[in-house]
Image (tube, rainbow, N blue to C red; front, top):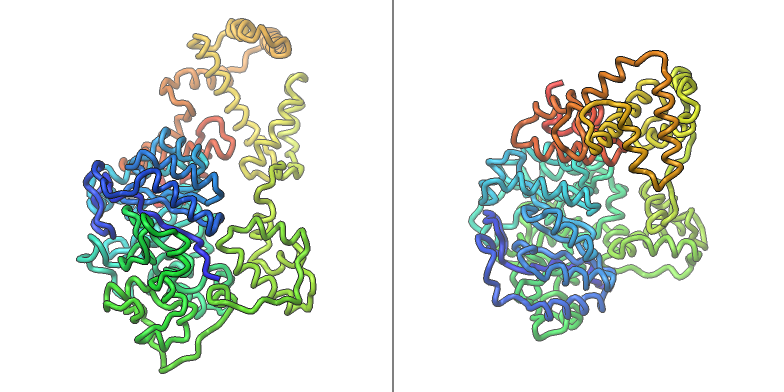
Length: 607
């Protein structure tokens, strides 16, 4: 019943940073590590994890996991066996090469710690000047390469008021998850002053309130099971109570492996469940007394009295660190039970602590196919929720439509149903044209009209336009002009000349169709009765752009970027260019800047 959904593996205690809160006291060195598991031992343990659950999430972290040269081999082995491999890193060592190698190895995502948007605060905490800029750059590179990005922040007294801004920044950067890692005072963080219980509660209530404010990005508190209590107090039917596994997962669906191969219930606990240098992973997981005690917990203090003891249960690591008893009360919870309270039971607690299967409900083949697309760690709780809905509705057969009705939202169901489909699912809805825009196209040369009519709806869909206007037509025309300018400059021209068409024709001598198009364009331009001075002037401005950038910037867009704070400018530039590419811009316009930066903490760049 208790399956390991996630394994966090501290591959090394080596690290290039020296963070003040590090729970394994890593950092300040990139060499050494003689006591760490060998490559062969790591590969064997990965195989053992996959034997127990091939759908588990394998979190490769450190220290700094990229300090190990064999991380790519370890990750690739896990991915090959079906594990979902992610990497927890400080981000400073992420570059185009390391990211490409991670992606090639089958890594699906990265988590990077950002504790402040103020470089001095972040760098001081992380123990290295320039750490923030490097981490932000690493996030941009990973995101642009197609890796899923999670931004991780540790709430502390000096950044509590900044957390909403960091969340906004993470969302604009394209992060899929914003993790709030609440400090457990262990390792080097043992001497640090934690935030107060009231501050803890305030941050969790903010997370509950703002959880739907960032489309496409989940806010996920970590080491904070009280979040479930807050959600339940707000609304007992909250859909997140049907998607988050109840209570602290240490020892029940989650465990940690140390650099030396010791297995513990979680990264913040040092009570050893087994030694994987000598013991099999399956034997430790199934038989260790250290782990099994968390599967039939007997909480002490107020946690043992609380009605939320199954739904929340408090952080076991924090109880161990503060009161010396892993079954003691979590003193960082503000809730005070009124004597012995009856435990709340819902589909979430049933998924974790067991529930009788409903044999009367059957599943169609199509419905089972949909369930297979749901991540393994969430499958059981979703299954229970769907079966509960079917029983309530008096249904004997579960179909995809029943799953859809039981899902927290139809959008979520549709996303799951499409997972793994290779077919093109792009919206082919017809985009209407304004009369003025259509008239401009009809005035264009006959040989270019079909291409314009085909291109414009495509660009409109890419940029979320619901109508093709003359302004949008001008924007796409200007992009095409910039591309043409770049091609002419690559042929050695420094200004607009008709000779460029002859050079282009020579370049495409092996493509008769392209040569015919060039002949038509040059013939049309050569026979015009009068020149278009506005177009010639615009071409001139594009020729004068000598930045040498792969993605061009208009002067207005460049001026906006220059008004961003200097520490954020490199990261902002990458974010804007990433947004521009993703949304089909061929060069960066002021509209692209607006779209990318409007909601960033530093987004109002001198309008």
